[in-house]
Length: 569
Ligand code: NOJ
Image 1 (spheres, rainbow, N blue to C red):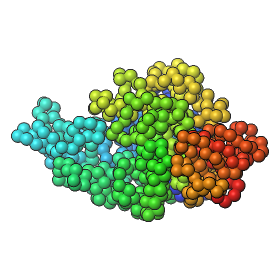
Image 2 (image 1 turned 90 degrees about the vertical axis):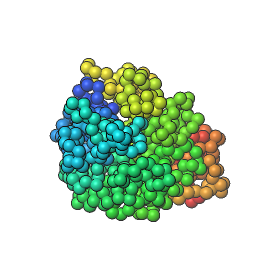
Image 3 (image 1 turned 180 degrees about the vertical axis):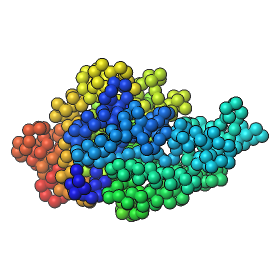
Image 4 (image 1 turned 135 degrees about the horizontal axis):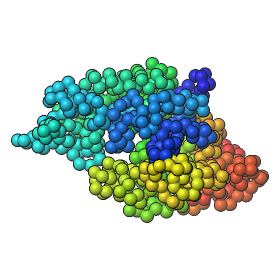
């Protein structure tokens, strides 16, 4: 596809972007691990689903101490996934399907198998090789205490001591994540030059965007002081991190229509917005939206807050419900506590999957109606829940291992997709595969395969397909949203989110009882209406309700409707 065939030049401002977790998407060669050939074979599925871009989880050579977020070579493809030629073909074929490619760049740290880190370990203290990382002598008479009190985000100290070949203990090195993920020293110009070159390497291959891992963590206070809760963090969201993104933006701007997307978890919206200034990143993930409980007032506050801080810096909003680091939202919304926080994953709460699924359907339509770009995490289009009962022996996540299971970690959101059939591997691997999927799939997923859902007009997959296609035509990019305070002369109840955008109204009922809908054409609904005084028969045969003209009607609890209103409210 040529550049002139693309839809709006600023495609990323309104795109539906599918997070594709490579090792769990589709396994073409039967080793139990997804791969690029598996993705290529399923590009038609993604095109039919209606996504505009794929964000690939890290696809580089990696020892997989953190599922690929420990990169050993930033300019190549993990042999378990394929080759650089496979990646080139995937990028090109994606474009033929109208699907852009976003890759994951991990700049805060690399793998301890990266040649630079191997060279650093082999070099003496004070060497240029060690200056690319954070090596320091330990504290105490024998240097046997870490250089400071920083804790790893995965649990335990953020420092590991090195030892020489003869076992003599040496300096310590910093790793904000696992010991196998040494942090780069971004004060070193070699590190900066290396990553700018890596960006060009992939942009030159046709990659359309970069998701930047742990984007707020890159720069550290060079004095490496102990943490002091009353001071700004010595390693999170430091002012000097913005210089890096200004330089990256200049690189991205050398190419047409490329996008930089920051993975940034920050509580302070004002600090957050600084990453979106016109000469920095194009967009950031909206984690406050993901973490918000299923509650109208809370969601409205996050939506309003998001729109206002993005407007202040002239950036488009983004919306996301799930990713590979969080409990899947079907499960979250089926718990008594529907909120989420990275530091309190709680798999002990009972989950009402039917309720969670119903709310997930409503949340999907709400999310897709909002202005900006929407991120989907693979499997949410099938309504997959978090797999909470994985056997300990099969778990891989360093969070689970480093907390001795106190934190269940993220494996439950990373289980390989079910494509077809009635038993594992559910078409994830080919017939006669020599290995089981790298994480076991629940037998109950037989009802949630792509094959089963594609044939079911009421499935989550059918809802996503219809919503993603309608989203393109019914919610024009850039169309603002306006909250409705009343319709049909009746004030909108507090537990109902109702707004217009483009030609449609999106109404989500989070109250325990049904709400009366205004008159208009029902375009799509997440759950059939409770009562439908129909004025005509359905416009299409695909569902008994969608596309139906209605004179009011009752939207049940935990449901969303898209309506073309008969009259201006
Ligand atoms: C954020 C990624 O999303 C997560 O999966 C990873 O473990 C950390 N960054 C460290 O790279």
